[in-house]
Image (cartoon, rainbow, N blue to C red):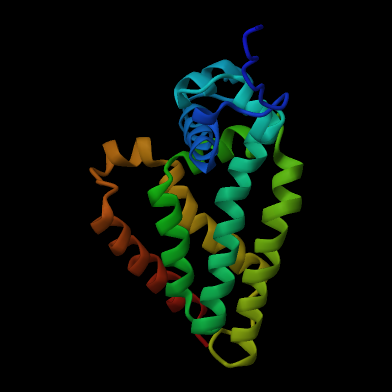
Length: 215
């Protein structure tokens, strides 16, 4: 009698040990670490898979290719950020800049790779993901926050002569730049980017912004 054939899994489907959301999250974590250290072009799929402890085929299975993995990484970070901002504004109202700052600073403080990745892959002259970032995330943020300021003006919370677009640019600059400049500011100012620093920074930035925009 011939030996029974071992059941074969469908083509392209991962082995049992590589199934499940844990593998997808491991790949995102690996990509997050590697893309923070080096630019998109310099990181290979094989490196990402090795960092995650899976085969390179798993990147193709879950994300299609390296660009798809990067897109998923951006979406996991910035779509969630936008949803938290919308929820906070719905709960606290238009004038609660502190709630907005806590979300922004909390996200960037917990994910220090974000500013480095944005500088290299979005803001640089050859940033390959600039258009995608603008269309999917920046354009939404640029609609949410200036509208917040405009509602605050109508409610009498913010100055009537304030330009909501410039207020948005100022708030983003005040919030993001200190984290983008962290390698320098840690050394020249002796800052420690821990939880206590993030709490002080939120309150400091809130007071600066509110005092400058208050009606």
